[in-house]
Image (cartoon, rainbow, N blue to C red; front, side):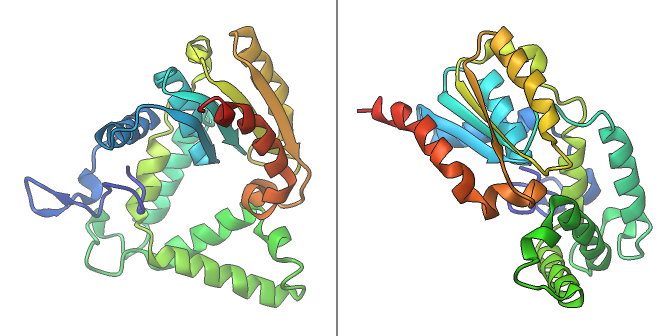
Length: 258
């Protein structure tokens, strides 16, 4: 929910007006996103999950699942993430809102059916991809820096073409105050926490305190570090480096289903 690829977002029609929500889309939190996912599973008749896993923003949701619905899953696998959001989320949100508002295509947030800030979205995505480690990811495929930069720009433009600018604001705002650590004692699921050696967003130095806090709360928790230069984007590109650990972690849980 809130994402451009989710169930409902700013481009969805607001029933009372018959027009896209735009800037009137209600403020939501990670708790609301997970609650919507749980409602979907309930509607499908799903009673229990072996595991909830996700990288980055998906990892936030995995931690939220564990504290909100502790009996619903056997394990969580949060990857390249943390059980809390940055203390600078409010500042990051304000900067993002100001940057989008400065784009002539923003139109006060009522841009649906028009250009939709694709130029500034492309620039934001380029910056994001570079923070995620895409340059290392593409280095072998595009050894020439100019070709690599062009490939990054093309990937960013393709993303911007299908992304709603409001979703950046909605999902950033959803992180305000997010911190599952005070609720660790509610967790009944086993935890496999995965970080990457070169991830600047969620550096491995945070892992010892997270694992210690989980164990202190009585949670069975393990940690694995991906040895990769690909930073935040490593979990997908370097899946072979940590999939054996994931498989070993899940095997007894899956076997228990029989």
